[in-house]
Image (cartoon, rainbow, N blue to C red; front, side, top):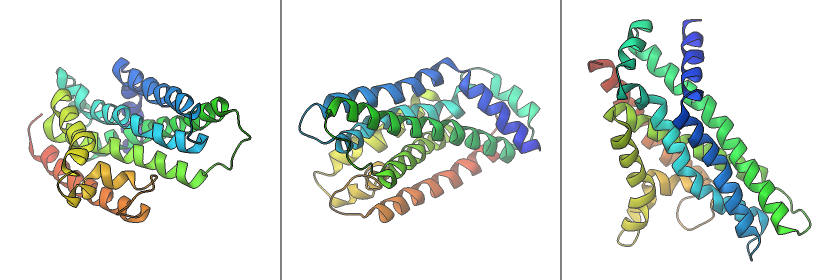
Length: 229
């Protein structure tokens, strides 16, 4: 009961945060528009939808960061810790609240991208790769969770978002020019869950991303439990 109340409170705080609402709307609308533009060219509707997912990563990272770090911008975290004294139940509540909002956002994003691409394509509707779309949605949720981990460790919106964006979007293409180890960075590995390409399979990519998250969550939980507010 206590955890459920904590999750409910955290969901309400997250969905009433203007920046979080902007992140959700942008995450859903931008890929849909991009998928429509891409589908007007050579790529098929499904290929256009999958390509547009790449641009939804930033929105989920922002949502993950805000789900934790927004309270550190002022003194609200002290109030929250007073209302929920247990550090681990509070952290669990924040993460579950993020997962609820992010799952809805990710599913809406991939669905909107497919619908927009198919409308713009104008060709007879192809078979929808439901499994691939679900993997893409799962990737978006998990990559945003990395943002929540970074926010728990840094306790600052800008620092957490910068670190997450560098790790997920900037380092893979830069390091990929000099070493294949870049394939094991969380963004590059996780993208194999829904993208075809050399290297890791979808299962392997998911496992690598899961390992990054497991280590990050363990470190974040330890830091959150031991540090002052």
